[in-house]
Image (cartoon, rainbow, N blue to C red; front, side):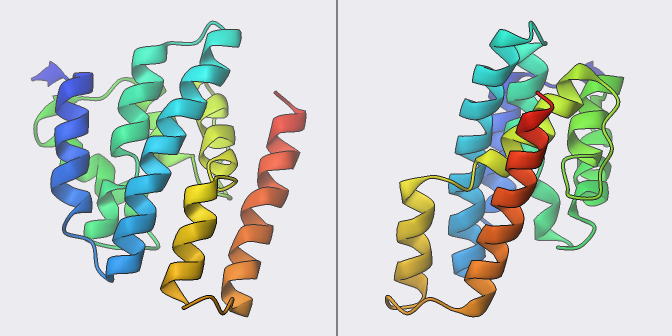
Length: 158
Protein backbone atom coordinates (compact mmCIF):
# COMPACT_ATOMS: atom_id res chain seq x y z
CA UNK A 1 0.00 0.00 0.00
CA UNK A 2 1.01 3.60 -0.50
CA UNK A 3 0.65 6.90 1.30
CA UNK A 4 -2.25 9.09 0.28
CA UNK A 5 -1.44 12.15 -1.84
CA UNK A 6 -3.06 15.56 -1.62
CA UNK A 7 -4.66 14.98 -5.01
CA UNK A 8 -6.12 11.64 -3.89
CA UNK A 9 -7.39 13.17 -0.63
CA UNK A 10 -9.21 15.92 -2.57
CA UNK A 11 -10.78 13.32 -4.85
CA UNK A 12 -11.94 11.20 -1.91
CA UNK A 13 -13.37 14.26 -0.18
CA UNK A 14 -15.42 15.16 -3.22
CA UNK A 15 -16.57 11.57 -3.76
CA UNK A 16 -17.67 10.87 -0.19
CA UNK A 17 -18.96 14.27 0.89
CA UNK A 18 -21.20 14.41 -2.19
CA UNK A 19 -23.00 11.36 -0.76
CA UNK A 20 -23.76 12.90 2.66
CA UNK A 21 -27.40 13.63 3.52
CA UNK A 22 -29.19 15.77 4.47
CA UNK A 23 -28.15 18.34 1.87
CA UNK A 24 -27.49 21.13 4.40
CA UNK A 25 -25.02 18.87 6.21
CA UNK A 26 -23.32 18.08 2.88
CA UNK A 27 -22.99 21.78 2.07
CA UNK A 28 -21.62 22.52 5.53
CA UNK A 29 -19.05 19.70 5.36
CA UNK A 30 -17.78 20.81 1.96
CA UNK A 31 -17.26 24.39 3.19
CA UNK A 32 -15.87 23.23 6.52
CA UNK A 33 -13.36 20.94 4.82
CA UNK A 34 -11.97 23.73 2.65
CA UNK A 35 -11.69 26.05 5.65
CA UNK A 36 -9.97 23.43 7.80
CA UNK A 37 -7.36 22.89 5.07
CA UNK A 38 -6.66 26.64 4.84
CA UNK A 39 -6.45 27.22 8.58
CA UNK A 40 -4.40 24.08 9.28
CA UNK A 41 -1.81 25.12 6.70
CA UNK A 42 -1.57 28.62 8.19
CA UNK A 43 -1.17 27.31 11.75
CA UNK A 44 1.17 24.55 10.63
CA UNK A 45 3.49 26.98 8.87
CA UNK A 46 4.16 28.83 12.10
CA UNK A 47 4.76 25.64 14.07
CA UNK A 48 6.89 24.01 11.35
CA UNK A 49 4.48 21.07 11.14
CA UNK A 50 4.07 18.66 8.24
CA UNK A 51 1.88 20.70 5.89
CA UNK A 52 1.16 17.77 3.59
CA UNK A 53 -0.23 15.75 6.50
CA UNK A 54 -2.36 18.70 7.60
CA UNK A 55 -3.73 19.24 4.10
CA UNK A 56 -4.49 15.56 3.51
CA UNK A 57 -6.18 15.34 6.91
CA UNK A 58 -8.18 18.45 6.13
CA UNK A 59 -9.60 17.01 2.94
CA UNK A 60 -10.51 13.58 4.33
CA UNK A 61 -11.18 13.97 8.06
CA UNK A 62 -14.98 14.05 7.71
CA UNK A 63 -15.60 11.60 4.84
CA UNK A 64 -16.88 9.07 7.39
CA UNK A 65 -20.02 11.19 7.75
CA UNK A 66 -21.29 9.25 4.75
CA UNK A 67 -21.66 6.25 7.07
CA UNK A 68 -22.07 7.60 10.61
CA UNK A 69 -22.21 11.05 12.18
CA UNK A 70 -21.20 10.28 15.75
CA UNK A 71 -18.30 7.96 14.89
CA UNK A 72 -17.37 9.49 11.56
CA UNK A 73 -13.65 9.64 12.37
CA UNK A 74 -13.48 5.86 12.87
CA UNK A 75 -15.35 5.33 9.60
CA UNK A 76 -12.95 7.72 7.86
CA UNK A 77 -9.98 5.66 9.00
CA UNK A 78 -11.70 2.48 7.83
CA UNK A 79 -12.30 3.93 4.38
CA UNK A 80 -8.72 5.12 4.05
CA UNK A 81 -7.05 1.95 5.38
CA UNK A 82 -8.51 -0.05 2.48
CA UNK A 83 -6.12 1.68 0.06
CA UNK A 84 -3.52 3.67 1.98
CA UNK A 85 -0.92 3.55 4.71
CA UNK A 86 -1.79 5.95 7.49
CA UNK A 87 1.06 7.29 9.59
CA UNK A 88 0.82 8.28 13.25
CA UNK A 89 0.36 12.00 12.53
CA UNK A 90 -2.43 11.52 9.99
CA UNK A 91 -4.26 9.10 12.29
CA UNK A 92 -3.90 11.54 15.17
CA UNK A 93 -5.41 14.36 13.09
CA UNK A 94 -8.38 12.29 11.96
CA UNK A 95 -9.16 10.41 15.16
CA UNK A 96 -8.67 13.31 17.57
CA UNK A 97 -10.11 16.34 15.78
CA UNK A 98 -13.36 16.19 17.73
CA UNK A 99 -14.20 17.89 21.01
CA UNK A 100 -13.29 14.87 23.10
CA UNK A 101 -10.09 14.12 21.20
CA UNK A 102 -6.71 14.42 22.85
CA UNK A 103 -4.16 14.63 20.05
CA UNK A 104 -0.57 13.76 20.89
CA UNK A 105 1.34 14.93 17.80
CA UNK A 106 2.09 18.49 16.77
CA UNK A 107 -0.01 17.96 13.64
CA UNK A 108 -2.92 16.52 15.61
CA UNK A 109 -2.98 19.45 18.02
CA UNK A 110 -2.83 21.98 15.20
CA UNK A 111 -5.50 20.12 13.28
CA UNK A 112 -7.93 20.09 16.20
CA UNK A 113 -7.58 23.87 16.51
CA UNK A 114 -8.11 24.34 12.76
CA UNK A 115 -11.21 22.14 12.85
CA UNK A 116 -12.83 24.37 15.44
CA UNK A 117 -11.65 27.74 14.05
CA UNK A 118 -13.16 26.83 10.69
CA UNK A 119 -16.64 27.73 11.90
CA UNK A 120 -15.97 31.47 12.01
CA UNK A 121 -16.40 32.14 8.30
CA UNK A 122 -18.94 34.22 6.35
CA UNK A 123 -19.87 31.26 4.17
CA UNK A 124 -20.95 29.29 7.25
CA UNK A 125 -23.13 32.14 8.53
CA UNK A 126 -24.73 32.42 5.09
CA UNK A 127 -25.37 28.68 4.94
CA UNK A 128 -27.05 28.68 8.36
CA UNK A 129 -29.33 31.53 7.33
CA UNK A 130 -30.12 29.96 3.94
CA UNK A 131 -30.94 26.63 5.57
CA UNK A 132 -33.34 28.25 8.05
CA UNK A 133 -34.82 30.88 5.71
CA UNK A 134 -33.24 33.59 7.85
CA UNK A 135 -34.65 32.28 11.10
CA UNK A 136 -31.96 31.04 13.41
CA UNK A 137 -32.57 28.04 15.61
CA UNK A 138 -31.38 27.32 19.12
CA UNK A 139 -29.46 24.31 17.77
CA UNK A 140 -27.55 26.62 15.39
CA UNK A 141 -26.48 28.86 18.26
CA UNK A 142 -25.58 25.86 20.43
CA UNK A 143 -23.38 24.52 17.64
CA UNK A 144 -21.69 27.88 17.02
CA UNK A 145 -21.12 28.41 20.73
CA UNK A 146 -19.62 24.96 21.23
CA UNK A 147 -17.28 25.32 18.23
CA UNK A 148 -16.14 28.86 19.04
CA UNK A 149 -15.65 28.20 22.75
CA UNK A 150 -13.58 25.11 21.98
CA UNK A 151 -11.66 27.01 19.27
CA UNK A 152 -10.71 29.77 21.69
CA UNK A 153 -9.69 27.33 24.41
CA UNK A 154 -7.53 25.35 22.00
CA UNK A 155 -6.05 28.39 20.30
CA UNK A 156 -4.87 29.71 23.69
CA UNK A 157 -2.55 26.71 23.94
CA UNK A 158 -1.24 27.14 20.39
